[in-house]
Length: 190
Image 1 (cartoon, rainbow, N blue to C red):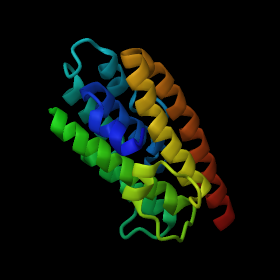
Image 2: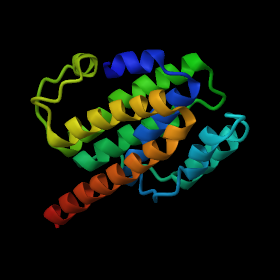
Image 3: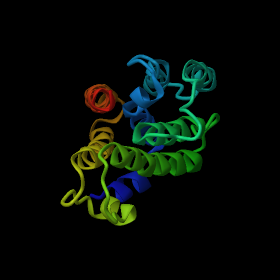
Image 4: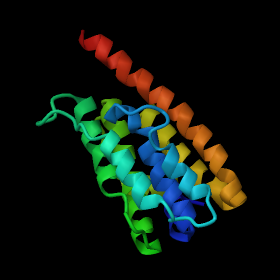
């Protein structure tokens, strides 16, 4: 099943987890640590899904308050602007419709951020890539991000709330990769 189809059929919890996972994998671009979004992940595991969402979201936004330099000077800065966009558009009191739009937007935004970091210069049609699920011709970071996005929704579809642990583990590993890429590029500029 394609990423577009998975997003279209996902429930509220899966949509929130999908968008949050995209944002979580990009947290290194915003200077955040691995635990910055943990309280939001905890909300997704709670029976009362949205009980503390608004408060925990405000706390995460406050901790990630510093934005990238204006105007963005490097690919990392541009990718950070995209990550900031994901954070700024998290629905505060989400409806399923808002979550579906946010998860879809986060999917595209995260792919674009990873493309920036890979210096990919292609004419990728993001809707086509997400519908077909193909990774041929994509840069390594983008291909891996597309696979992770699909995996997140498949895990949640298969395991429900129990899949959140697997999703979080996948995000942790992806953050490490992204941190290493950003660090390597910073050393290259020094």
